[in-house]
Image (tube, rainbow, N blue to C red; front, side, top):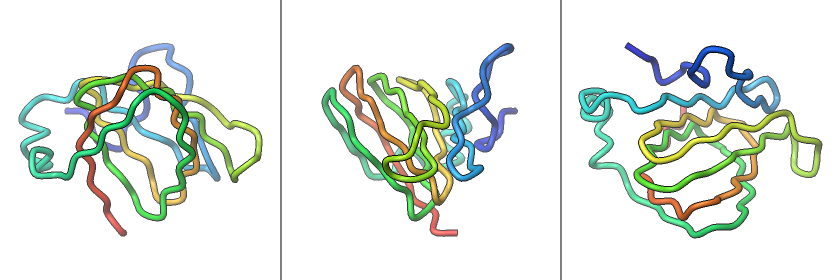
Length: 119
C-alpha cells in the first residue's frame, strides 16, 4: 500500500521538488479505501482557474485533486531559484509538508479537497 509520504511514483521519475530539504509527495490514484480512511469526503473544498498562485505552507497540507492539472515549482524562499517541479492532477493525493514554498501553475481549472495538519 502506498504511503502519503511516498515520493512521486513511477520508475525513472525525477526526485520530487524540495524546498529547504522538504519533499512534496504525490500518491497517484490512491484506492477508494485510502480516501475513506483519510476522511477526504468531509474535507473542505477549494477550486481555482488557470493561472499562477504563490503559496507558503505554515502547516502540512494534504490535497485530493478531484479535477484539474497543476505543476508546482518549489523554492527555498520567495524569489529564490526553483529547486524542482512536480506535476499532479485529477485523482492524485498530494502532501505539502510544513515549510514548503512553491508556485502552483494551474494549467486546467482545479477542484480539490484539502486538510491541514498543524503538527
